Amino acid sequence: MAIKTGDQVIVVKREVTAEDQKSGLYYAYFGGLTGRVDRVYPDGSVCVDVDLESLSEEARARHFAIQESEQQRWLESLSDDVRSRLTPEQKQLKMSYRILVAKEDLRLVSPDKSPKVEGSSSEGTARAKRETKTQPVQQGMRETESKTEPRSNKPRRLSEADLSAAEEAYLRSRRVGH
Image 1 (cartoon, rainbow, N blue to C red):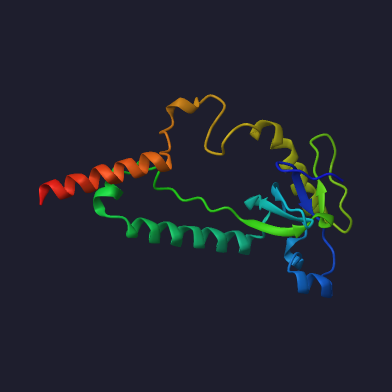
Image 2: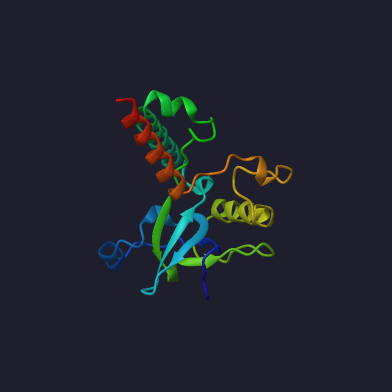
C-alpha cells in the first residue's frame, strides 16, 4: 500500500503491543480515527491530521477546551491596539489534532468503497463512509470556504516579509515621536 500526503486514511483497531509502548506509534484510542496524511517519514511513520469528528466525545470536548484556552491566552497577549485591528476571522484559532502512527496501522479510505479494516466497529466504518462521501467536495477548498465564495473576498494573510516591514515602520514611527 502506497500511502502519500493528502490521502484519506483510517487507523486500524487492534491490541496495543509491547513494541507499540516502546515506539509510541500506537495507542488504543487511535483505532478508528480518520484523517488526512500530513507527512510520510522515511522510517515508516506517518503524521495524520485527524478529523475532529472521528474523535470520541470526551477527546473532542477536551480538544475544543484547549483550543479555546489557547485562543484566549493568545488574544490576551496582544496589545489592545493590535487586538482591535484584527477581524473576527483573524481572531479565530483552529488547532489541528495530529498523531504519529506506523504506516502498517493505516488503511486508505477511497470514495467508491468502504474501508477494509480488521476489527473495526460498525460505528467506525460508518464514520469512515461519511468522511469519504464529503472528500470530493473538500478537495481544493479550505475549510472556511464555500463553493460560492471566491478566495479574493477573504482578507489576505500577511507574509513574514509584510509583517517585518510593518513592524519596522511601527518602530520607526515610535522613535520619531520620542
